Length: 271
Image (cartoon, rainbow, N blue to C red):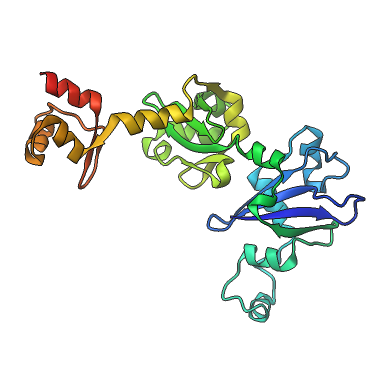
């Protein structure tokens, strides 16, 4: 990830108006605006959001802002432009960096900064992003945030206003594909269907368990095949026999290793 401060030379301020985070592998962008920015000083594309008090710009709108500043891939002389800049192939990221984020529509430009130069307020805002996510048996989405809180989201509530989410809930292979979006600003299904963090948090129920509690449960209660053999004082062959006879149920079945809960092993030991 690369970070940039966004400045506007048309404004009478020397500080940044916001920050741009570029996730290069995912070719994704997110803009975080400073909260002291009013709608009239915000870039035109963001004014409606700032008026509503939204300073974390959704990914699709952030990408539009970047593309305003990038030579389009369909440009007639794109081959010559690539050659002049010694680029082997077209890349929005590369052209955006070459332009320094400038365009004819406003006075904005970017300056690359380190993670340490990002203001504390912006870093704290990003702590509310998603760290990990997974589904429960009843298809509730659990989101663990970087601030250590956990929310359980009923996607059926979101599906009422988003037909794509309704499709997700119909097919196991789609909702099993869930992954955290770039920077933790969303969750993505099948690399195509996305739910932003604002919608997730609005529909989410805060759980009393923290993210660290979940990690502790896994760390202290899940063991691999070798540890299971030690606890049951048996060989891998005997362990495999118990599984085949449905006397022991792994929590995860792998190609070389299975994983078991200590509670399941204690049940077998007591029988």
